[in-house]
Length: 341
Ligand code: NAD
Ligand code: UD1
Image (cartoon, rainbow, N blue to C red; front, top):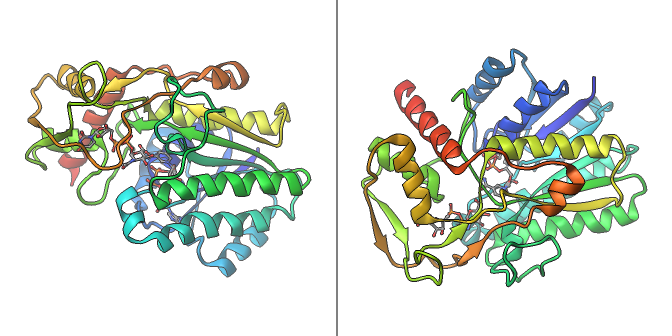
């Protein structure tokens, strides 16, 4: 059985990917420092898969502890690297935290695995690298824009580090997945997104408003040059996104990749406006959402949705869940966690 290390495996996207990996027959070793997750997530993973992954509590900023980990687990077959800090606003206030947690830790891991032969490596990148792209839907070869935030910059730097390292280290094979907007939860409602404090992202803010934790959703601007004036994004169900990792991993393990560093957009290819997301929520939850239009949020791009042709044809992957399915899963998850907490 192939053994895969998943850093940040108790986080939102990581936990859904651990589930898909286990269901696909992989053995999983999770590294997480619990800075944005909890050990309870393991229970959810076990409830879905009937299998307990190995969990190692480790802060990847601790270089010695990371070296010890890779010495102990010296027979691994792949790494999926999710662990990072991801709050855009916080990265503006505390950029060094972001460069340390997102860039230094990547370097430490690469230093360890470059000593081993042929370990497939999958990196969590983001559509944020495109900024406001001129071409819509956005293809992978669209120009990378000046990063708006230190967080976004860590993703750009991460990809550059990986590209340079694959050129220099024989055998290192990397796939960088540029996620569009992950939303939703596992259909069993055993795992999902657990934002700490006031959610910055649209969908958890919607579900927290509907459950009564927030008074009202502020829609950030309706004067954009779009169909209804609100911004357009590509919202992808987190389970579809998780499955893309398993497929990318299999590509590297079977050595069918054509270049040592490959990049794929992971989105649905469909753009939805903020108002369409609200309508979808109202449809599936059968209730009205309390919202009002406010001014634009600084740093928001007008529109971003993926050209997924490369992932569809080369990876053989495509998103299958609809926006309604994703919104319903997010709503079921919100109701479940508020009932149990
Ligand atoms: P998340 O915060 O839910 O998960 C990240 C996990 O990594 C958490 O469990 C956290 O405790 C852990 N972690 C953080 N720093 C660590 C460290 N130093 N050592 C060990 N563990 C550490 O985030 P997510 O939404 O699941 O995102 C996963 C990855 O995908 C991140 O790299 C993120 O930047 C990227 N990404 C996320 C989105 C999104 O909208 N969620 C979009 C694009 C890219
Ligand atoms: C944000 C991050 C981006 C990250 C992405 C991951 C910023 C500026 N960008 O992007 O770096 O990669 O999440 O998913 O934070 N909205 C509201 N009201 C709200 C919240 C959001 O109207 O309370 C709107 C936003 O203006 C946007 C859309 O909803 O048009 C989606 O917002 P969000 O979920 O924060 O994602 P992004 O802005 O795409």
